[in-house]
Length: 369
Image 1 (tube, rainbow, N blue to C red):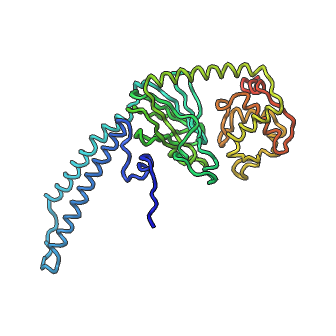
Image 2: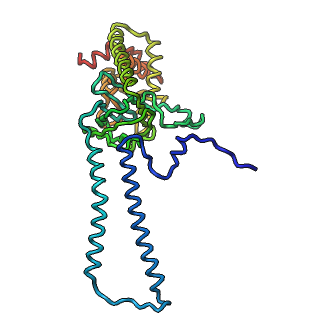
Image 3: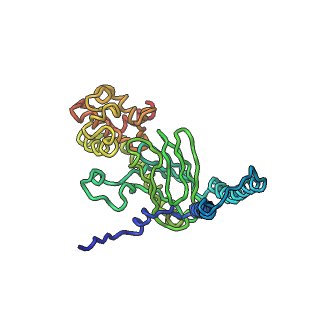
C-alpha cells in the first residue's frame, strides 16, 4: 500500500515552519534578524558551557587519578565571569534598543487608521478620509460545526478586509469598545493591545502588495477565536482609487438613509429584514430561538424589554449596555436595520406585541427627540 500524497500550498507549509516568519516589513525583518542573532549567541554560549563541562568531567574523573584542586577564590575568574557577560549583554542590548526605538516611532505617518476592537469584530476608520466600516469573520457557520469541509483560510477570512497602501507609513491608533483585545498581524512584526479607554499606536510600512492575515491575540470572550484580521496592501494608485470609491459609496448610503427616514416599512418587510439582521448580529449571543444562554446572555423571548418597554429596547440597540457584552449598534447598522431588528425581536418567538418600529423612530431616539 502506498502512502497518500497531500498537496499543500506554500502558505500551509509556512504555518508549520519551526522558526518565526521574516514578515514583509523592515521592522519585521529587523525583529527576525534580532531573533536569529540572540539565538546564535545563546547556542554558542550553551555549546561552550556544555563542552567545557564535558571536557572537565572526562579528563578529570576519579578513574584517571585526577585530584580536585584546593583553592578558595580567584580574582581573575571573578573578573572574567563578570566582564564577559556584561560585554555580551551590551552587544545584545544596543541593536535591540535601536530596533525598539524604530518600532515605537509612529510619527509623520502617510495614512492614519483608527482600529477599534469589539466583541467580536474590528472597526476601521480612516482618519484622513470619510471612510469607516466593520470587519467581521466570513467563515461559514457550517464549516465551524463540521457540516462542511474547512476552507483554506478557515477562521482567517473576513467580509471586509483592511486596505492599506504599499511603500507608505501607516499608523494604527488602536483601542477597544468593551474588553481588552489585541491587534496582531504576524507579517507586520508587531502586536498591540486594544484597551478600552486608551489609545495605543503602532505603525507599518509594507513593501510588497499582498494579503496578510492575523487575529485577536488577547482572550476576549467566548468568540475570541472568531475575530480574524485580514489586511490587503495595494499599490498607492490602486489604494487611492479604492478610497475614492468607498467615500462615494458611504456618502451615497448616508443620502439614502436620509431618504428612507420619510418612508415606512410594512410589517412583513420589517420582519424579513429584521430576521436577517438578527441572525447576522444577535443570534450568536441571544441564540436563533431568542432564548439566550442562561446566566450569560439574557433571553429575548418573553422578556420585559422585548415585550413592554419599547423606548428602552431601542436605547439598548442604539447605545448598548455599559459593562456588558451588549454593544452599541448605532454605528454598525443603519437606522432602518435597527428599526427592523427591534420590530423582529418584539414580534418573534411568540412575543407578538404588534409593534412596528420605523427608521424615523430610531432617528428620534438617537437625536434625543
